Image (cartoon, rainbow, N blue to C red):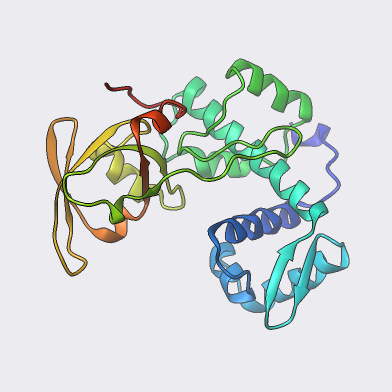
Length: 237
């Protein structure tokens, strides 16, 4: 499939732009250290790529102050993110991959699909708005909805919430949460919340579970009305 696709930028350039976009979106400073952590490389390699991307007019980089995408860089990043998230949903919905498996597979394919292939996936999936983790899928024109939800770790005891989004960086965390019954559009009742950064007691699918604050921070929740837009989860009334 990759042999038939002529893309103007290398996979490495696209990967860096995608990560820079995600760092910007999370509000984190786009430094060489932050980028090297996300890319699992050295700060020296990230610094070298910063220079390359700046020379290509894809980022604006100020030494010691970090980088930000130019409009051209953001366009490339959103195109790659669109490919990635459509592929994730296709793998999940059509091929039965678990939500903990799709990220790695989509990472291998995202640089190698044609625009026609992308459009066919989108039509097959009935023009979806969100991927299997609840992240928004950019449109072909580069329009993307804001990230939804607030951290479950911030919910108070007694709250009844619905899962809108789950962080997808850690497959083992996704597997663990899936085993607990966490899913998009699924209801969670916060039964108890221990003080001093203690764990939460949650009721999920009529069973109680204890979840630490760190992992609860991977789950983003909202109201029932917000959850009606989510993809792939159970509905409730």
